[in-house]
Image (cartoon, rainbow, N blue to C red; front, top):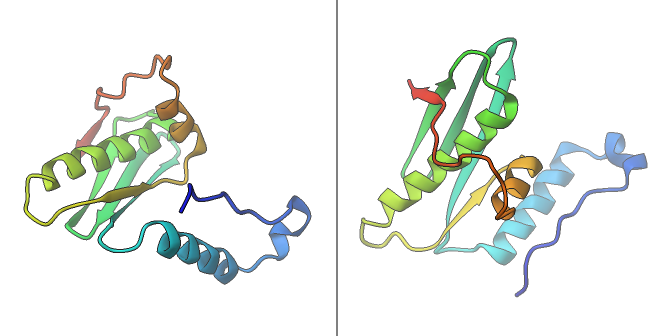
Length: 130
């Protein structure tokens, strides 16, 4: 198989597309391109007011972390992916932990990671574990 395609309904019908349709398509892509033995790691960031944070879930654990006050939504999303990559690095030291795929809903973070010229300090942590 090749790389998964991004599927979204046309703008005109997004509002009319039920959540279950998006979930079904997502599950189809996951099963087609990342079947077992891939380990799925899910990330998400959020921001409300001056507080931001993120979560990460994998078959081997989960975490919820609050970022420093006034952190951006982008920082929360980026730190979520950064934490997932650290988690994977540690998990690879364990036998039978082969093949990981990280799922993020942040297009800007994924584009930053693809951009080799990016000035974003991926190794800098702006969040404290809870």
